[in-house]
Amino acid sequence: MAASPVAGTTETTVTAVGLDAYEGEVIEFGYADPRQAGGFEVLDLALIQNGEATLRATLAAPLDAEFVVVTDKGPRASGIVEPGVSHELNADGSAMTFSGGNYQALIGRVDANDAVEERLRDVYRDHDDPLARVLALRRAWKDRSGAWRETEDSEQMAVLAELDQALGDNLSIDLINALIDSRDEASAKAIRDFTAFNLAGEEVRLRDVLRENRYTLVEFWASWCGPCIAEIPYLQEAYERFRKSGFEILAVNLDDDPENWRVASEEDYDINWLNVSDNQAFGSPVAKLYRVVAIPANFLVSTEGKTVARRLRGTNLSETLAGLLDH
Image 1 (tube, helix red, strand yellow):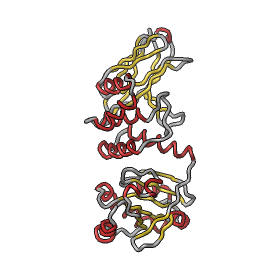
Image 2 (tube, rainbow, N blue to C red):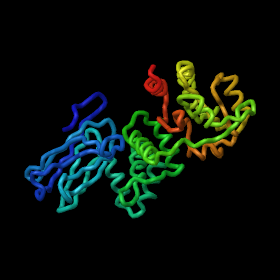
Image 3 (spheres, rainbow, N blue to C red):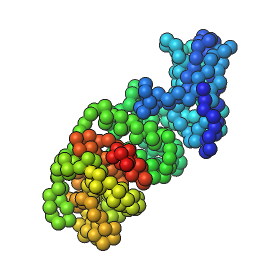
Image 4 (cartoon, helix red, strand yellow):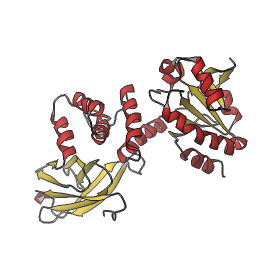
């Protein structure tokens, strides 16, 4: 059943009606989550009585949820649930529709439009409300059949990075990132090898770095990127703490001016880990190889060449390394 309220959350209520044909069955309320066994997180269950059921959950932010009557060919629906809002599910035979709330009015109107992809793009690209943008972005990750897409375009990844900065801790962003991670894990792809040059003009090859260390962080950054610079103290802390235990950082700089790269590396921030660039900014073959369209971005890679974590920001890097290196 629904969890007890916690700080920063507000209860939402969904009332289902018109379910007389499914008397005594159970209706389920949850959301798709590739991190869970079965790919679904259940928020609440309710028994259908007199054709009705009431579902509840505590939420910190609007969420794209799914509802299904758990029986053979039971009706299902999706909708944007909001904290503190009362929603309604209306069943008509084998169909079920969801209503209530400002975000559902916006996203539902988009879904009802013939040009769904274009309308969703308009919302996640240009809407004033970042919560509306992230909800539209997650919807855009599905194709017309409702299946999750196998690829994402560079604009979507850039929007995701922007919203990650704007919203901070947000379940919808976590779910998009989990989808990307699970897809990569499912494909069992090894990290992509590359060669680049350091400030001394010496060739550095990722494969060689991996072979010499237990874990290597491939970190994309630039001197003009404020969030990248904000990460440097955390990188320095992790490097000093774990370098003798087999941890290395291979920074890939995306400046287009080699002097800006040099000054940032040697004078401004005293970067003492491996640091390479081809000074082609986002046109860099390495950035394209990793589909990096927004920074900071990073990949923690094992000596076998497998990605074990991504987007390690702030103290998450040291915490992850402590678990991996038994500190």
